[in-house]
Image 1 (cartoon, helix red, strand yellow):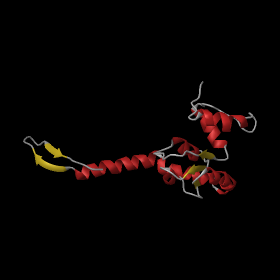
Image 2: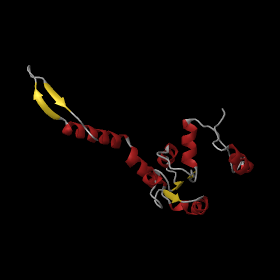
Image 3: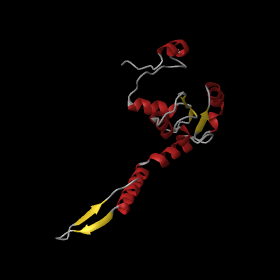
Image 4: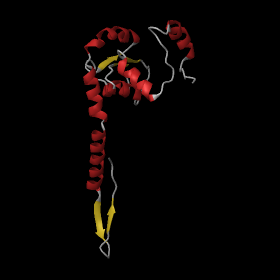
Length: 158
């Protein structure tokens, strides 16, 4: 299967020469089971993207697998990563390289627990219930129609 490489020149110059298939292996596209296996067994996930991300599933998947993340301090990363506790937030590639040495201080259990707390099914259901309760509270009964039916006008901002 072909794999999309966003910056082919960078990949060919800065990554490909170091792939030796022993210490550095380029996996290309992997299926969900292989991805889970890889993320569960790596030292850390380096998420060095130089633009604001609104949400990055790879970071969540890594942390759910107990893998700490080193990411650029941009976009949503500060909401996902507790700096020094579940990973590290960095400002440039040099900081990222230096921070790799500190990754052993991060508890893999804390990584998993933080994502479970934020994204568990129970948490999401509870949040949906809160939204529904807010909508119901904001609905005002306008009148009772003949025959006992009620009419509800609801303009909600959630």
